[in-house]
Length: 635
Image (cartoon, rainbow, N blue to C red):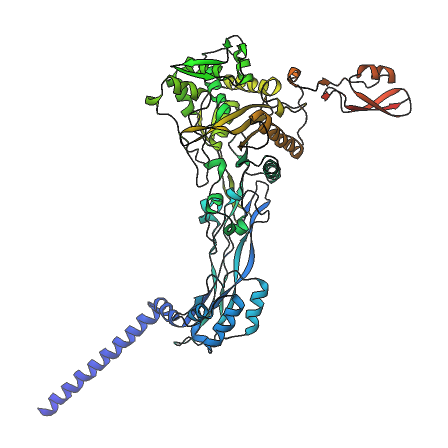
């Protein structure tokens, strides 16, 4: 009986042992097969370390691929405190090289952490400093590659491009608005150490960083350079408080150039004030637009057929009374009897008050809203302003009158350019855009092509055609004469807006502006120039801003090699000291006949003979009286 019970116990014990062994085998099998990846990852976390390698941000280019923002390679200091033997000596030497205190550096080398990034002293080191640290050859002291943002054109397009912080994060402009695309994926050098942080003799693993997506802007670098040059000249010549220029393609809302002063260099943004670096004036600044806003009143009046610009007349006595207030014309004594077209050419405030009264507040403010004022345009940049309009309930006779000629409301430059583009492009309001496409960084394959966004049709093509014509006569025969370019068709409108401070208009302190477009019959370029309180000159948009716009247009003509117009509306010479005449074709004429045909000019003959076989300038273009005409003679 005893032996039988003993055999049973042995069998039970044997079965239990077998079961336990099987359980262990199954557990090991489960761990090795099903939990291997998870446990291996946890194990690696105990003895592997990563030395980070920052990724390059995506490039920012102009519309033609010219690089506006790129990256340069710098070096940063990283410490592994557990590997540092003589912490006092390392702290002393590094503090001396980096120009910081021993106490500050000792805190870094003695930090209870696996990896310590020395910030900010050890970030983006110069080659000389990095070389001195490398020559120390200390254990636990590492120099790692780091990407640093670099802007090759310094302050060009600075507010629009924006800038990045020391950790390569976008802080303003395109750098902020498209940060999630521009930011790459960091890489690392993976090494292995024991529990005390001592490096193990195992192979390192290199994980390459992935650069961010490239962003191509709508900006044309050549036009942008011309704009920057003009703004530099403005600051030097007039010493204004602020100045800006904006160039747009009116047919799709693409911004071709945009800049302002004061400016900053995003490579050294820390040297400028927050007010300067974070205020992109063409989209942020709000102010009373002045007479450039009259384009909206004109377009609305023509669309509603409340006036005929050729037949209807208005008598300007020099002022107009509105609900007890007297609104004056800029010309003392007024312009007398004028057609509405002449009201536009003369920028007559009382005449535009009349246009506003004929429209009525409901219709005028409907068009103002339809043209996009009073709200953000939606351009893909941060910091855009929305402007301020009167609430319709608060619009009385005086508010209606002043709004009609651009006073008492505030707008942004980007709103004005967008609205005027709609007024002259056939009536289509487009959302302005600054980014044209996103590209894969290695192959430059287009990831996303941005298309223009039509917001609404505001006015008809017929109305837009009349607006273009009227504004071309402003340049040919009116206040915008200083923007006239011989043999090219330019339209535009001047603006002189008195500035407001603490609810009162300042004396002798104006924002002078000019809104122009070219070619006037089928515009491809809109240029807006605004200058805040220019010094040493009579403050009128026609005398200050129009010539600057003319310079920009001339640059565009040269850059794009634009041919002269086949038909040009002659300038109204009663406004000018100089006269221009259309140059006749003297090819084939005798020397005597040619001299008689172009007697308004100086003639310079070359060659041998009596018959003209070549002339320069070419025939049929307008040339200033007294200019030299070169004629080549032959037998």
